Image (cartoon, rainbow, N blue to C red):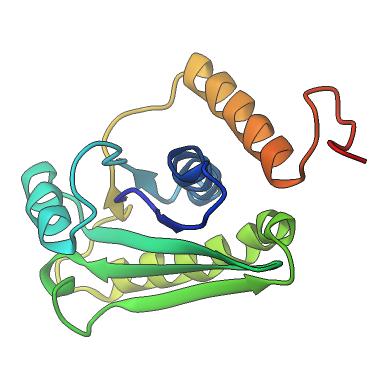
Length: 170
């Protein structure tokens, strides 16, 4: 998974990119059918992703963008088999919302669509893997706790709340 490109004037672009990827990765890995390798460093270029994915033996490349416009927001993600990532063989999934805070609850629907495609595409491939491999390795309890903390921090920023849950500036 490449970093999510953030198009926003909020000044929190790196934070939003990492947080959205954290939340999406957690939801995709929840079923145990998909593993994620995040390319947090480096290019957001799909050609770079294909090279990196090939080197680690991944089956798919996932990349996309989050756009905040006025009061609205959208998240557009593309999933592609490594051998078709440069072509039109990818699947585009997206969500839109009337406010940035409405994106988070819709991530569940987005991840279900992505999982369905990723697992289905891996099963129908000629040399299918039992588990679509977007990553290698296991998630430690410490990394899960860190992910939960970062997701909570991101939700506070998106919902414009203080660490104790109070609205900011109201």
